[in-house]
Length: 256
Image (cartoon, rainbow, N blue to C red):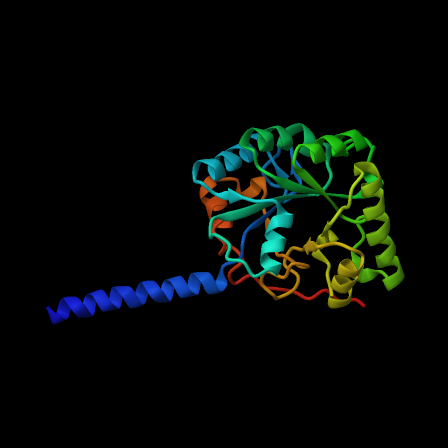
């Protein structure tokens, strides 16, 4: 009887230790896509339409709670408890294929997402047009800023950073007719002063890649890159587990 009690206690303590480890290292997965196009499977910036649809179907079939990025940021700021199966979806740059290939799947699944747009590319070939942005926005896809020129901000002066932040925001707001509140740092480049500049510019939150060491910083949320190079669903499951960032080396951007 005592032996059984010891075994049960060991199982309980082991489970408690695993749960503590999981929750103390867990980061809400914010998926980062770029292009959704036919891919050779090698590019880190491309996911084929077939792979993307399988991944979205996986989230739907397994009951993941796909939330708007702004809602996630608000909950993090308010220190609300966030379910472990929560996921947010983002796209960088503003490629036309986001509208052509990703948007129909998101609409079918009723999933929100955020597309971060390089504003100088709007209305150019292979990039989103103003009307595309309005359709996406009206359909529940948030539009955020990815600067005017895709500038790596730590390489620029404070004045240049302020211009990139403000002009891109104003341009998108003119197109959409309402406030734009979300920002993505090109190449993830964020430093403490740049983070402050983003907040000062009127954004409510921002996303990076592997810059910064703070978990769940609403102005430097880490994201999980998704590409066709790792397109199998087991790999995708690990990416949405909340532990795919574990052990990842964090870097600090050099700059002002």
